[in-house]
Length: 269
Image (cartoon, rainbow, N blue to C red; front, side, top):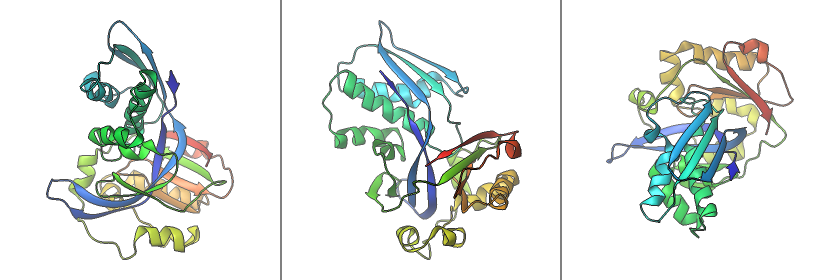
């Protein structure tokens, strides 16, 4: 079985408070984008995980794909499988590629071995993989609160718009990004900005709190955002805790030559 785990961008990201469990409460809008990895799972005599495409740092057992398999195997008598991941979505980019890969493993194993897990049960496993993983159980945009796992639908559509995503050679870990954050409540709730204001207002209202930390430490990331606005983006922002930056455009545009040194992707939403 083959699937194509998609990535996401964040439309606004507010870090509102520190939690007693050491995590943070956030407010964000996860929006799916069709930049995908390729994941294949087939039955096998032994458990194995291989990958091509972008190099994946760390030990294989740390990969969320294998963690997802072992989560289910703890509760079900799963046979051995071979997983092959062709990695296209860059890591350390704030795009949720690894989370999406892990969640797709849960979904695929549920289908392949007819585990008959409900969406709520799969969501319960996904939150154990990571705070943003539950979003990848859904196909449309969702408001995320709590650690990002509490989701609710939001009436927003970027259908027909064009997106450019630029990932410089900078890796920002989530832990690193949070170290410089001072949690605070936003002046306007995210849902109010997204539903009551046009995209022309977003530049001055819709913020990612991690930008202050990341741009200060890695000025190049901030310069990419500035360049996307110069090129005519209706809205531009860093995604998640970085380091990728996206620009939303009214019409298709080719900026590949402007960002030849970086990972670049573009497409219609």
